[in-house]
Image (cartoon, rainbow, N blue to C red):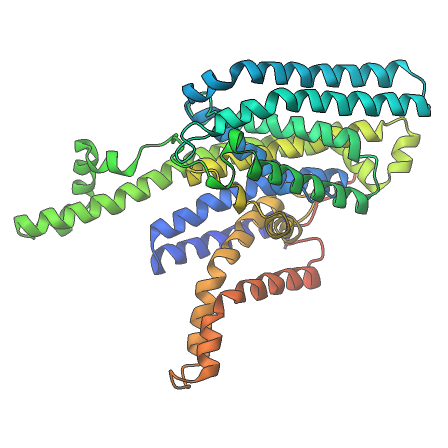
Length: 456
């Protein structure tokens, strides 16, 4: 079986599984899973750029996704006027003090020779600058969080359409990646993994505790949507007429009261599906654009250079390639894609919940997507995003069904049966491990391994 046939077959199997979910459970559930698969695929593409293209082991995926989520809040939420009025002077002074600290630190670092004296002066400059920044920032934070803290207690955002946050989220994550990369990309692979994981934890800890910026663990809910609301569709004459025409065969034979009740139920179900389809269209467009650009970049001279650096840094460096600079480039680009996915996820949820970003859990999940799909292969990473998220979601109901079927011969009061059914949700970890082991055993390069084209 050649690579094209293998790709078509793999994607066909995934979409058949989604169709089965639609028929057996509901189309609303199938579309919900499909939308999350699209976001997971975008995130997997970002990780694949870093690992599959350049061999960079980034374990801080959730930190960059969280930055994308913050962008959704700061773009879409309306500004809290009272909070700005109470703190804008101190915020300006705090920002100026911070920028002055950064400028002074850079000046000291660049103008003085490396010595103990430079280290002491640089340390004193940074510490003094931080104290000065906090001197103005702390009163501002206190005044912001005191403004109706039960409902707001933060600055709010820019009041713009949330879809703009997808772009802003990419830029915010890219900026953070540039700062992190300037410090951490010189580390060896295992130390880079530890560093990115630690930085991810720091980012999420900040988001959990800085209430004035993100409301912390109180969460930001009710974010705006780029698609219609279900309740608006249910009250729209054109939508009601559309649903009525779609179900005309089943509605025509009913009495007036029964027909009205049945139509209402159909409209409610259809509104949920319509909204999910709108999200599907938007997410699919983003995924297709990023995928096409990724494929084009990978097949370009730049992409071949990145793979050469990945395979042998020493040889690439000996040929005049700036390995550190190229690593920084791909680290920033991959993190930007992850930031876009994080903003999309927050948009879909309609809220920003810092506690939901669990680095060890979901970073592992994204990495499994890349490994199972095929590291270094963009189509493989997208496939992994679909397949692994599908398994992750459906493993619990399938696990419950397996436990019920496997213990059907036992009495309902049997302690073993009760224990197995109550803990069936843990089957998801078993299924994830099983999929990973099977793929690594029979296809170590992933389901769709990287295709190496040899040039004559």
